Every structure is written in C-alpha cells, then in structure tokens.
Image (tube, rainbow, N blue to C red):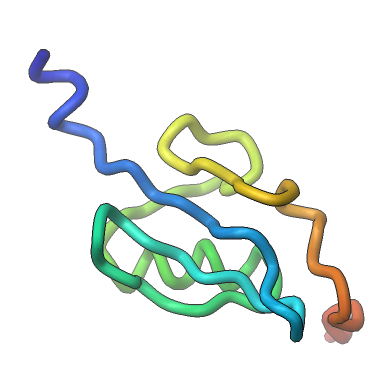
Length: 78
C-alpha cells in the first residue's frame, strides 16, 4: 500500500489542437509541454526528478507517446 502512495501519478494528456500537451499530477496542472524535454523540465520544477520521461512508470502518456506532438515542428538543434 505504501508503494502506491509514495509515487505520484503524472499524466501527459492527449495533444491539444496546437499540439501542446497538459501535464498533471492528480488534479493539479503542472504545466504545458510542447515536446518531451518540456515534460522533464516541468517535472523537475515540481521536484519530481525523472531522467527518462519516455521509459518511466511514474508517467502515463495519453493520446500518444513521448514522440507524438502533432502540429508542432521539431525542436531546433543547438
């Protein structure tokens, strides 16, 4: 029982019309992501340090996985 309450449940919601995705923990919206790197940063700011957002049981991806950002261009390489 303690295991379930110890780990927060984060949901990355299906893409909006503009391709952005809402990130929530329970009833709280943590932020809006436009690519997978945003999800990691949103979680970091919420003190939920996740090194791999694509392969983590903490995160539930709805409406597509971490590579699904329809309507958005690829992030620019630095």
